[in-house]
Image (tube, helix red, strand yellow):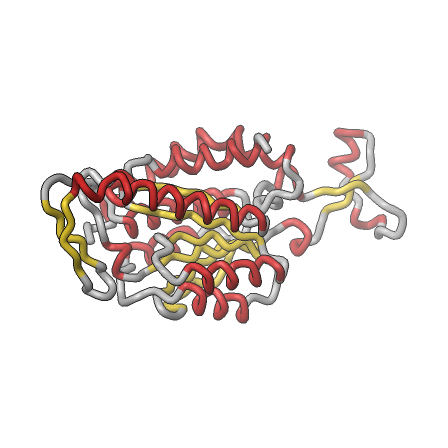
Length: 297
């Protein structure tokens, strides 16, 4: 794994600040137009007030808002305004792979997680961090205070890959620990048992939680740029196979495209956001494109 510190400080911090400047107007418009968005509550500006209704305590009226609008508004309680976010990062060995990109799949996920943390904390939404391989690992409890960002970044700099993946089991463990409606932002290459993973994600969604699945693959895992004889090895099991690149390339690409299409269909039907990514895409641009797609629905 490359030294992720170079992406988290100071270079990544500068990139995240640029992302915030670029994203601000899009995120605001996105929130206004998508009240059912999993990012509802992402901005205090659009979610901290609601119209005064019969039965509300007059003591809760915001007179500053009344002076500006001539209408009665009350401030929402924290439970009404905030959606707790959890960044869930896959630490299985397969996440340590890169062919010719600067970032491994784990590095890319770390950068994406840092950006999402920054955006949520800027908007005063609680966010925490969870890691997993065959089971849940280290975690940072969700907080919305400013000191949460350096806490999360500190943990991100120390992440290392471990063993194999049991995504379904990890999701089930996560579901058991959640006590309130939450936003789960999952980052994984999804190299796990497909059926059990999909069932676990559906159960998590059925429990009332919002989910975004960032499917992170290496650029080579999508494009298959190899030539000659290629030794393909499973990083988690160690199993390997030799193939002739010219013979395998087209079938391989079609298989990956089919897997992505199937995940898109299955997850979308369950009202789970599916975001296919590869490490050749700048993570900030990929995040912006996702928000734009959400806004356009």
